[in-house]
Image (cartoon, rainbow, N blue to C red; front, top):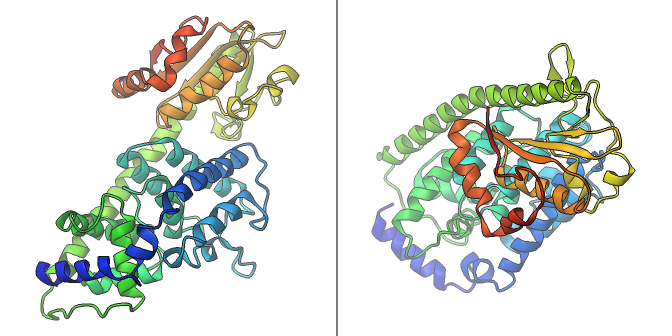
Length: 398
């Protein structure tokens, strides 16, 4: 399709009262839904991390979130189908498989907390590498409501419309195909930014209306292979990035666990009781598990704190014999710096007035600038008021 034809069609689409641009993208309630869905996603992630999510989709917090998305007018109709339990196929395998459920919860938590394209794509590559049966790019419909400028929505009509628009050959059900389509959408969006938006919902809505048959796609030259060549190049690049990220992710996870193990062993050797993050204690470490020899309960005082659910996810806590926390450590090797600091503040503010020696962020050299920038955010201005030795300003290099 020539740029002139595309521009003509986009102008017509924006003005059409039947099209998704007028009926959904400009819908006054749309932005309100972003806020409520984000809160719901955070609740899902918290329940999974705390082991409270259960093994059923029906009547779960995830069903509430996905149902809210499915109600977003025509563009997201049927968005809940991908998450419904299919007993004969036993998919999506995030209800019966605890490890897969935790990985899904980690994806949601990381994407709620992060604010960069690099991190979102890294988390997508991580979940893709796990090959969780039945958990594909339909999850992008959740990610869109967390990062509308990074993750476009995804469904059959959008794919059909994108293929008709560009001559690509996107297939359903694969993350690499979704990411390559995303790359093409970004290119198309950049060419027609004056008629679309930084919010990728606009270009996705345009593809949706094409795929749903609201408009006949403009004629294409069957002998023109430029679009297909570009599509194959995008797909090859995405797959190469996924392969690189997979190896990097495994190494980073191993290093994160290793640092937690060092802190665990050091704390035990000093005579402290040690708490390992609730969602990490089952990780393999040395000849056993990371949580071996560690606390299984935080104790009544800490369990009763406001924000205790967040405290349970702190990577390592050293606890003395009377139940006071001597030191808390967040290992920021791969995880969200922002969410780690929030967990530390939940702890410090929750036990204000009780004895607390130090809070530490443990990070590699290449993340030092990011850590210091996060600590300096206005949202964390209370850090300086906390009477804690080295409170969050003590950056330890790993």
